[in-house]
Image (cartoon, rainbow over all chains, first blue to last red):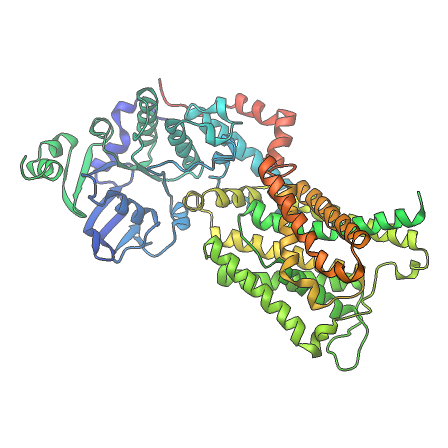
Length: 271
Length: 337
């Protein structure tokens, strides 16, 4: 358990040339006549917290969906642990240790908060039909362990008091926290966070930032898409900038916000 | 109370419970998983015909007549319908709900036309008769015969209900509901949506096939006209009225709608001249339509509504406080202050 999050050991590991966990190699994505991602490459190292920024329409979410397996690239490849996963479905990503959240949270609205988190559990015997009849004891034991872990995660994201409520009653920020707990239930090595600050009130935003920081300090790699530059600056030591589907530049948050090419991409040539 | 009335009550309930089996199958497909199957009649027909062919005695000019025991017929009918559902599902399960509906409707129409025209196998428009009936040796005592049949079908419904409740309250059922509510989110959690949907579709189809087999043996005769789209409409009406997503609602809806159907049939035969009764029968369909409209307006979730389903293991644990104690005893890692 980390004792001092400010030391950011994950970031240190990455800075020391940590192993590449996710590699995006010359990826392109074409939607009809629109090239949303155009020959982009980036690497997320083990233990790193990498920010991905860019103006609206830069192709960030498309790239995110490519990494998450929701889209399949028209060229190039997505590699996890040097293994090409470009054409595997989204449901296989978690098996490689990569979990994601959504820009607009997608809770299972009619299921309770606790059951939402339980759904993230992997390899449960009870997900096989016959095991529920033939190995009832094993299914029950695993479920009890899963409930214990889910409750711990709900404590972590400060939603314990809502565990029996249907997820539809949660606020936008609480839904983001629920998604975080849900994906943590799967024990991912890397978490893809799609605009976790969007539409979240300031007090909950602080909770989200702290939890993300702590997860990274605990060794989890994080790829963060975010418009909130203050949040990116607080969390990430390296930021990649996209514009018009292409890699523009990268550096520390301070470097990229001063980069004339980045300013031009955000504000246009008039800037 | 006269013996005839009790016997009729048993007959009525037995028929209603055969529909309840179909409803339970549909509830697994639609209520739990969101699969829009409007080809119920086709799967019921497959179960009925396969079971009839397996269990009837040998007949000249018709395939089958294997004379197997009735339980093997039920098993064969159910497995055949499950297999057909699996094969259909392999082709269609990726389709959007409305396309799945069109595909299943087409399959049901094809099955019904096959039953009508494949005379060397199905008996064509004349159907298959002399299907062995449970407790046929007791047919001389109508009351006992009816009670025994009711008990048998009720036992089938009870077993099926218990098995389905176990499944929907398991992690497997939780994944089905997750897929129904938000497929991309379920995929992101590593759930293979197509595999789970295919399983639910095949099991639901198998249950419908079992219903067809049970009903065929209860009536003793089947014909293609028993498996028209009207049957699909009836079963959907039952689930909507009883409460989609609720196994008890599925059973209750079957009894209620079959009650409306049977009472309206009695009313028509008592009110209209024999020459007018065939046309007046359409009033039955109108009455079911009115019942659906009334339920949708007054209680859109159905009489019982969707059950608040949680893991049965979770309920057991909460009941004994084991989990909360365990969690309290072993505080998990928390972020540093």
